[in-house]
Length: 528
Image 1 (cartoon, rainbow, N blue to C red):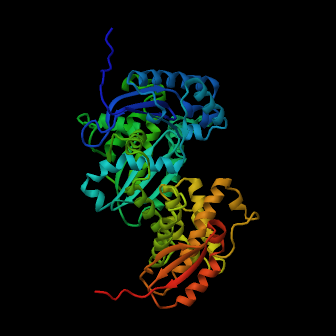
Image 2 (cartoon, rainbow, N blue to C red):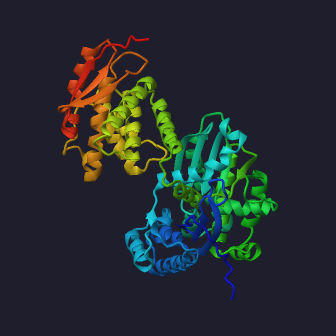
Image 3 (cartoon, rainbow, N blue to C red):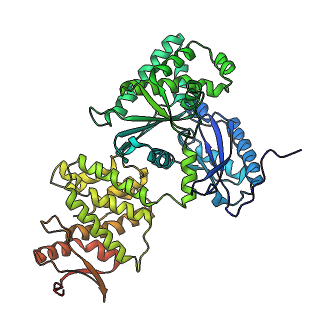
C-alpha cells in the first residue's frame, strides 16, 4: 500500500504545531524556509473533532472520556510526526487555550496527556494569543496598502472567546480578549427553554454587550478596515466566494453574510450537518460565530470586510522558525503599546524616553558581569516609559498610582505575570524599597521578586540621573572601579542636584549590585 504522504528529504528539520481548541484538535506540519523566501512551507494539516469546550463551558471540568479522546488524537498526530521525522521536542509545540485554561482539572488533564504521549502541552494565556495572532497576520497585512495608512481591526471568534487586535498605521494600538465565544455562547443557551427565534434574540443581546466594549477601544469617529479570522468565517467566505484561493485576503459583504446567517437560523443542526457536510460540533458553532462577526461589522458601519486563512498555528510556526518571540519588530510593538498607555495618562514622553534610554545604557554596561534576558529588557523599558503615569492621578505617592495603572492596563505582548512585574518595577522607582509587608510584591514568586528588585534598582538610578530640565538626554559614560559605578557626563548644569538625587536613590542598586553610584563631571572634548 502506498503512503499518501510524500517522502521529503531535507537538511532543514521539519516542525510541527498542535492546537487543542474548544471544538477540535488541529496539527500543522511545515518545512522552515523551504520555499526559499524564509517562510515556512505547509506540508500537512490534520484535524480531529474533540469538544473540550463542551465540557469546560458547561460543567467547568474536562471529563475523562474527553481527556482520553484528546490522548488518542495526540498519539495519532505523533505517528504522523514520526513519519515526517519529527521527533525532537524543540521541533514540536503543543498549545491549548481557553477550554483547557479555564478547566478546574486542567493540571490533571495536562499530566494525563504528558504521561500518555510524552508531549508537554503549554496552556497559553491571553497575551500569548495576541502575540501569536500578531505573528500570524503581520506578514499578510504588511503587503496591504491600507495597513500603513488606516486603522485595522483584526477579529477572531473562537469557541471560548473573541480576540481583537487593533493596528494604527501598522502599529499595535490595542489588544483585547472577551469571553464571547461561539461554543460558549451556544452552550449558554441550553439553560433557556425558549423557541429558537427567542434564543437567537438572547444571543444577540449577549453579543451586543461585548461589541460595545470592543468599540470603546477604537478611536472615535474612525471606521477601521476589518480582517476576520477563524474557521467559521473562513467556511462562510468559501461559500460566499467559491473562487477564493485561501492564500490572499478575500472580501465579503456584511449583507451577504447576514443572508447566509438567516438561512442557517432557519435550519436545524442536523440539516446544517447534512447540507454543508460539517461535523455536529462545527455546525453548532457556525451560526453564533457568524452572528458575532455580523454584529461587529454593523457596529463599525462596515459594508464589507476581509477574511484570511491564517490562525494561531501560523503564528506559532513563525515563532519556531525565527527561534523565539523576541524579534526586534515584536519588541517595537510592545514599546508602541506602552507609549499608547503613556499618552492616555499624559506622561511626559520626552522625559520617559530619556529615563528609558539611561536605564538601557546602564543595563548594557552591567551585562559585563550580569545576565539580562530579552524579557528583562522589555520589562525595564515598559516600566521606565510608564514610571510617571501615576502623576495623572495625584502627585502624592504617585509611584503607587503608577503601579496600579500599569497593573490594570492592556499591554500588548506582555502576559499577566509580566504586567504585574512591570507594575512593581515602576512602583519602586522611588521612595520605599521592596518590603515583605508589600502584598503585591510578595505575591510574586521568589525568582520574579528578584527580577523586580534587579530592574527597579536600575530604574531608580536612571530616574534620578535624568534631572535636567532639558529635552535632550544626558550624554553618559560608565566606569566601574573599586566597588564604585561612576557615571560620567560633560554636561555642567545642575550636577550637584543630580548627585544628591542619585545618592538618595541608589540604595537598592548598592544592595543588589554591590556598587556605590557617583556622578562625575568630565571635560568637554574641544578637539576638532
